[in-house]
Image (cartoon, rainbow, N blue to C red):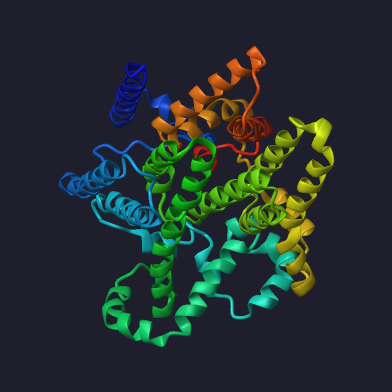
Length: 439
């Protein structure tokens, strides 16, 4: 019995190293995407890599410390203080990976770049946020930033709040001004329009976003502990630290969705098992907050709703009324924030959603290529170890269904997650590697 876990660990390690080797040396270009050029996407292969080899000591050093953390927490359940230590190590690892670039950490430049980011630059131009929200549904199609024409305004509101906090604390600007002013003078013309407070806010944002993403460690640990126990919960948060989609693309605002997803699933699972309507409502509020940021959160809403539905379908004869009430409470939570914004500012969610769907451009990409490549892309960027465990869990679930054995709470969550992922894939809304990694 002891050989099976060891064999799986070594097998995952060999598979991970093998795929990294093949992609690094571009032995199979198709692993980077369907084709190069044209309207289809393919991740660009950089040779030689934009990497300062000696800097690899930084992420490897953080990995060594994480290994020590794993060794010290191998027996007892992990305390909140040790989870907080892991959070700091997760943030340090992401920064260390970014530092390995030849030009070092460029997260602030990414935040300021309207072509790369698209949410922070418009936030700097907003003086009256209430008026912006009142007008948003009408002006959304004509906004100069593509991301705002295809997304709700939540991300821009988030960065606007950070900018206002910086402006309310002029000591921060005075402290940074001697350092920033001479450097800003040498920036390209496209970045000359920013003020020192804007750059300070961008710096804070570029660290706050991955920090909030790393906070997912707490709800993930609680959720995994509730479903599988302390040992699996510890492994779960360790794997989360190394998810490539979060490390490589730091600090895009999509990182925030990991925290929203982890919170939503934890609140839903605990709400169901504890019979807590308050937690189910809060789970809905979390999902609704995500929808205020991006329609990419729709699969999360579907998965959480299916989780509740499957949970009660399994007990339909005795608890169907409770199931309907739970779904209603969750749904009320989803629309709560939007209802408040509609009543307070006249922000019509229906019109915003229509604008987003109308303005979305699949860029002529093939539906069938996306159906084939999206699952691969999702599993690749979540990391090979997580992908292997996910596929193994699906196989075990299939065996249970064929054998008609009773399902458990983790099975309900896996069914809901897998089905929502399938709907997302066959729906054809994700076409391109820069999109499917979000899931």
